[in-house]
Image (cartoon, rainbow, N blue to C red; front, top):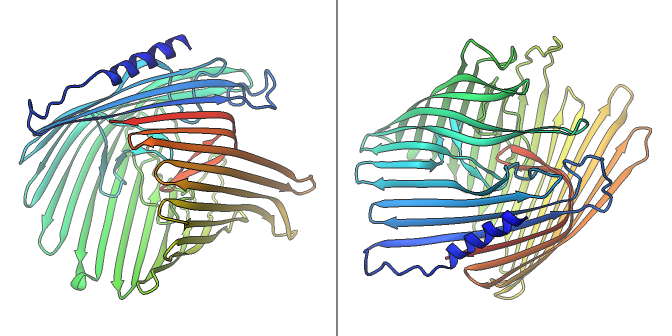
Length: 520
């Protein structure tokens, strides 16, 4: 950890250097920043040597991030320095899948804002329309932070917005084979160039056209192979129809791979269609959505799920519709909503030459109620995979009680059920119950104490039930508004973390996490 300590000292030294006030020297000069340090020590009690060392073995990591932002008149700049070190035997963090580095410039951006255009150079995020053609953004829930490293020109006019951009998307791909204890790290540098035109017509009508071309790299037989792909599409938005009571949106995109196909025969050209109609009448908001994503397997898009955002959504091969109705009653500050959807796939022939059409029926709803001191949000849903004979149930309860102006209690509970049924025999093959809960006492804005409790019960036919429990305690202290300190000790379960229909697998954790965040 020697290099880590030296890196931490260097970053803190930069942070604590006296920075002169430029208010008198430069009018409109603004300087701000954030320093964050995270220590993670994973040391499970039941770990034994030579058993799954890549994920379950004890390891520690220390990550430091220093972000500096400058804004002066029409100029802006940002730089982020980062260090990340892991102890043996682990060489990367399965939570973030970030590579090890002593000290690096993780992000750097500079730009100029003119009345008629904006130029950005360095690292920047970019999304197009509803994310079907392109989506490169930070997602804190999934711990993904990828940027385009290159340049972008934006020219807005009264009737036409023009955007052109290009650059690399750099990240690390890890391949590990537990049994043979092989670990490889591959640096991916995909390249994307593209542009977008958005025409702003009368009567609230916007028409957009998009084109991007990318070179994508993949690991095949321990080598990095590239494939060229283009994504082109168009979108139409009409707002305020029928005196503001109706909005309409639709988008179509086409994905075309080149003919070399180094990725294998399973890479097919794809297309994506999404449409929505939103009606507003009285206290009702009625949303109707349709999606059809066919072979839509591309790294840098996130199309709308047309479903529940906190569950995993299939975007590779899916089509169908959903209807969602919200009703808000102002007199009691009550929101009630219900959503029903039916989806299926295109039944493409699999690698085993099997064609299977799977229907999915999903219905869920919720109620959100606010009183003087109490806030309650309850949800429940049921999803049926008809062909697979699989049932998913998902419910949540969130209760916040404000004892006084500064003191509050927050109780959160989440329940997930997954069951597979042998309908011919009328028996459950396997089922899993997941319970997640935490209770937080807060003294705003100085202190918060949380107790986490998780429980999983797995039942399989002709086998005894498996039960696991996890308990953790977390404290957050904010002595001043600019400084936050947190400490978590205990056990966290494995599972899925989902955001916007996208999910990632989180391994189990047992140990300590400490975090320091300072904003200036």
